[in-house]
Image 1: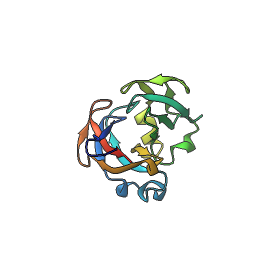
Image 2: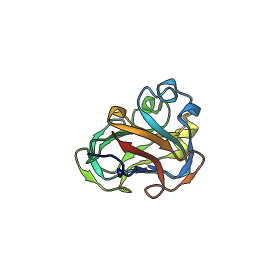
Image 3: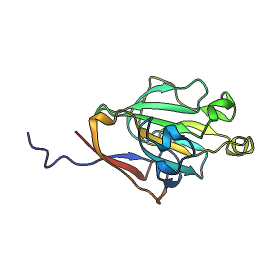
Length: 159
């Protein structure tokens, strides 16, 4: 009936690191919010975790990205690095299987940071809400130092 008491929903950081605005990402698909709205994290750790409770609906064959569907219908895309799909899975180890229910903080992918960075790729990791039409008031914790699976980096309200 009334939406006065709808509380904000939170998405936790999928990786430890510094939260930056999407406009700072050196890829127009992400910086222009063409793939969704959210935040980017400059990682300091090598484990990518589920940023919320949900179903792991997709893990790319190259393990550089995965999608999660939350109980409220929100769809998240976690994309590890820029152009890292070109590595064909090298430097990425899958830790969870597509179709499984996961809790926030569940390890999904481990990365070999040294290998990927020495190969010339940025590991900036994106946490995006892809079906933005069902949410409003998306805010990112820009400038925060986030801990994977513990620090809220996005908050939003359902429409």
